[in-house]
Structures are given as C-alpha cells and as structure tokens.
Amino acid sequence: MSRFNNLSEAVSVMRARGFVNTFSIQLQQVYCSELGKSIPPAQLTLIERHVVPLPSAQHGEEEVYGFRTDDNQFGIMTNIYAEYDPEGFYAVFRQCLKGQAVGA
Image 1 (cartoon, one colour):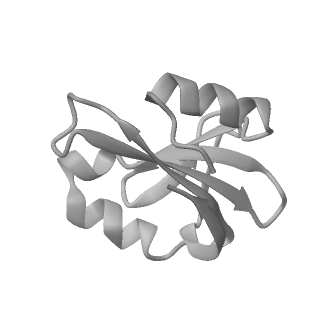
Image 2 (cartoon, one colour):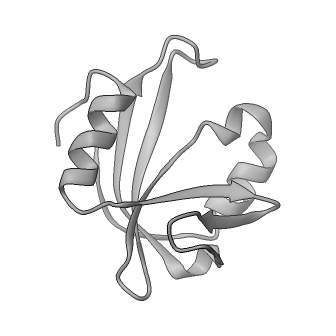
C-alpha cells in the first residue's frame, strides 16, 4: 500500500475505493454521521491502516483507518481524537476487530 502525501489525498483515494462513511469517536462510542447511528466497536473490522504526514499533529503524522462494519458498510476513521483523549481513543479502538489490515 502506498504512503499518502497528506490526509486529503488519503481520504480521496479511500473514498473512491468505497470507504464512503465517516466514523468518529463520540462519548466512548463510534458514530457514523452518514448512517446517523452509533456502531459498537466490536462490529468494526480494521481493513486498512495508513500513515500520512500532518505537521499540525503532535507527532507530525496522522493515521487513517479503513473499517468494514458487520453489515458491509465501509468507512474511514482517523486517530485525531487520540490527541485530545488518548485513553478514550485507544479504549474504543482496542475493541475493534483487526482483520488483515494493510498499509504503511
């Protein structure tokens, strides 16, 4: 899997490949605005993981994840929430299933 030059490029390419939903962590849950619902983390399988440069991030880079839900919805999540609440992010993220994730 190629390394993307920036977040916009990663999101554009992933959306073109079918990752059309946006997953975010809110109140210790994963929420999808396009589907209008919360999704239990255990119903998400990590399919892809990419690292992109992001100078404004604490570590100078951000991770972008491609997930599939149990009902075959595909979406994107970033680790930007981890900068504000690392424990909360990883508590939710650890509950997600790890598939054959590919990426940087």
